[in-house]
Length: 153
Image (tube, rainbow, N blue to C red; front, side, top):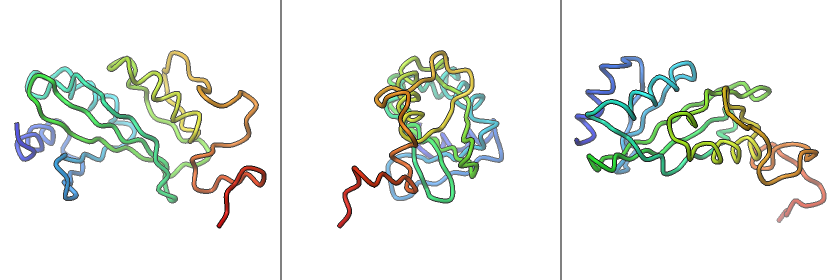
């Protein structure tokens, strides 16, 4: 299915999604946090999309918002999409987990929690993955400051 056909199908499920191609091969879908889990479940289970492979899950600090970017592929249909979700709540950024949909998300979400402080509702084991439990702050946030370890030009 090409990007236009994917967009037509997916927008019929959720008409308030935002779509862009941003000059890339992937159709980009922006979703509101409260719709994330439902959309992701549909993307995997619908026989026309069958996105069975979550090949990348990345935390992002856009300065005005924190978010997560998911790269999905269907190994059956050979098409791919990028799903983006974000929140302006930097004090308590929270999204629903997708680890119940794609098991590989469990460790990716732990990494995002560790480095960005984004929490994932219903995650089976949300705790730091790389940093110690007593680590202060989230080093991949743009406002993170570490006077000892920062490299400044």
